[in-house]
Length: 446
Image (tube, rainbow, N blue to C red; front, top):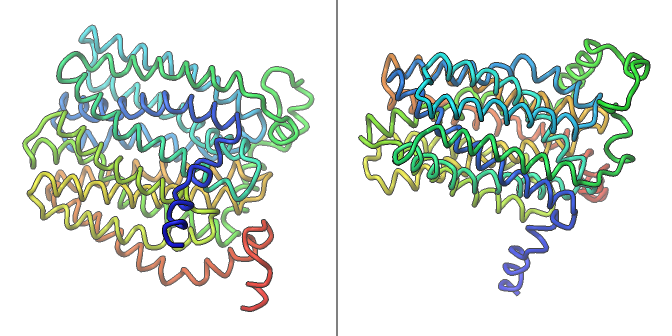
């Protein structure tokens, strides 16, 4: 009986049930190319930033300025992706990314890149991503018809992202050391072609996705002006997020984790070179290790039947993250360090994916785009502030103590979340019942 349960738990029908949708198959295929290119580029930018300046503060600065648009523009992007067809928004923004990375790659090949150009291109791509990220998350919810499958779809997408995190940094390290960093950017630029093709061949049900949106091509000016003003839409979204307790609690937690925890990645180039005495390949291994852990965590989430219980995962994952990061600071063994990085990557994935699935599930349909824009702001917009803070902290007290402070901060977040967990569960349980994820009998018994 136990063996049969294990087999069923890990069966393809459970873990891969979202692949029953042709649109999700196409989405997954296109994203596999794009996310691989993204991780190659992320690793390359980190390495180039430190190689050009040898400044921990510049690492924090480039992370801050490249992610700052998520803090400023993303809330407006939430309104945009509810006014226009998400698919067309994605096609337009991905086309811009192709141009950006092809130019950046050619500059690197011509040895014409410098720290200011690298910073400028990072900011421009950050502006594009501030629209892409919430649009992609919302579009993912559009092509999943069943509420109970949202957790599976987001976890599978996270699995893909983590596989790319494993492979991408290694490819980047190899290309940087043996060929030229420019080819990393060229590969990323070309990868977006696959995403655009996948989006173009999808057959999207207008009744599900496009009935509440306006086409970028076919709609008249009159149809657009009939909609509420941008500022009013933004205010409605902010009021909904601020006044709805479950969403407010989730967003506050992931924002705190982004500031104190997720910014550790910007310090890995310093750890790889100054503490471990390695090179770009070493950095690739460290980042790949976080991907291995994240992949296992994503597979764990994808096997869950729905999001019920994700609030507990979201509560205790910061504790695992924080404790492991503090232990990492005291370990000198290379293989143990990789193992700890895997745990850190898994805990990080649990926070981001569980919060994503919860927000997609409990949000009102007409406000989901704006909610996901605030999610993107919490995950990506707060991150640059954390990276800038950690960069300055590292400059003053060193990378080891900075990472220890980060880990201790995450443990504090976990303690506060555990205290507030019963309140969150009480607020979120009626939504589970309304969506058919829990039986009404549970509420009656309690």
